[in-house]
Amino acid sequence: MTTPKIQSIIENFVSELSVALVEASHAAIADALGAGTSVRAVSAGGSKSSKAPKSARRAKGAKRSPEELTALTQSLLAFVKRHPGQRIEQIAGSIGASTKDLALPAKKLIGEKKLSTKGQKRATTYFPK
Image 1 (tube, rainbow, N blue to C red):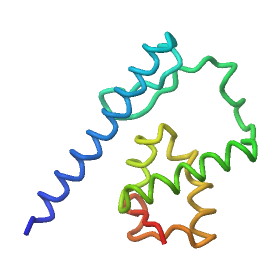
Image 2 (spheres, helix red, strand yellow; image 1 turned 180 degrees about the horizontal axis):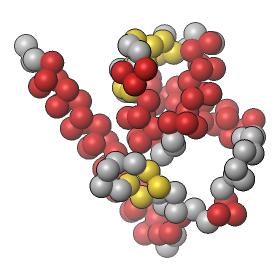
Image 3 (spheres, one colour; image 1 turned 45 degrees about the vertical axis):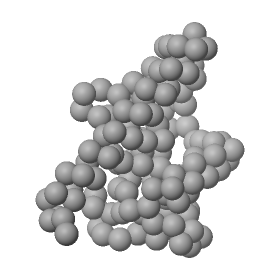
């Protein structure tokens, strides 16, 4: 039986490993396609920074298209089905989105009863129903 501290260390390791694997696969794809500047990079702190050109980003305050929201909602649901019990920060890091971008899709999936949550605030973990 593992203690909560050991379990936390294991979960953090798995989360960081997942982010590193996603980053490595993105870099390998970018190298293969010759598009190294359009891949998101992970800083030492673990946060994502977009290297996409400004023209590809939404203007400040601009709404996302229904297609973009649908795609993000579907990828969030698929990820939670494969990796239940993760926090939104872990999910965001793994699927290459910001936690702010995942707020609306998460609320929609909870409202549609496709996701459930446990915990409060930053300790909230997500599970498929």
